[in-house]
Image 1: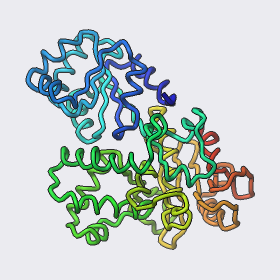
Image 2: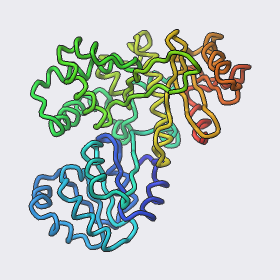
Image 3: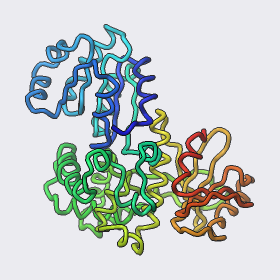
Image 4: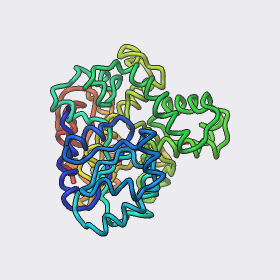
Length: 390
């Protein structure tokens, strides 16, 4: 098993809260992680039809089988359990009693808010980070290799070909899960929607254009996008609010959590295909931003990431908001440092009255540099350097 950074935080939360929920996309490693850290607890998979039927028919009797708690996997499949869990957690008031996992954020969070608020801690687990792969001795010579392979653990644990994994992932998990969340009859249209989203990764979200290109209504596109967000397939990076008396873009940007899945949906077949593909830059952005998100989530922290763009086209690709002041990051897939990499950093620094200490360029090359406008970090070392920024 590849060691997960989130282990430390999960153990800490289980020592403080009666229940902990580990949430994230299908196949991100949730089950493997909780079974490793809590081997003494009975493991119950609620996707199993017989087990699920038993839990639905008699929730109280089902839970009474586990007086010392249990790991309840994919608990969103049996929402009836939550109100009964509330009584058990209040009665026993023992830390780490139940460990829950779920892969549909909307259903899970709705049930937690209604029944378990204040009794449960939540930890988001995304696919592997670059640091986790590197610590396991797994690394490719170029970032293009990483973008194509993606970061789902089974690719590395079980040596599965990425194309085979993603083809199965789309059919087995994404299409099945969206049918559970919303009764989608036209899977062909939904699959086209998925592909269009992949092609628009890293772009400003224009739902009207997306709906038109897919041949669906605006409301349908909005609902389908919400499903992809709830299933941890895509996320929306919101624009930062600080305007400096400038007119700002107000639409969010859409990214895929996993570059391998986005590349597969976009029809990018291999590294050579990616080298000259228009999605090379946006997928590199996705890689960097999702890795920054993983750093936060693995510590039990929420996202503090934004982008900034004014109406004249000046843009900061990623802005980390923090009490000590924002960290601004430009993301460039080029492998040679160019002067224009720093144009928008300098522009933003003048507006905000900040200096180069908290300004970074992350690029596709392999050198670390310091320039008058900020620091230059290579694609394969930025996470180690930025992981401690608070």
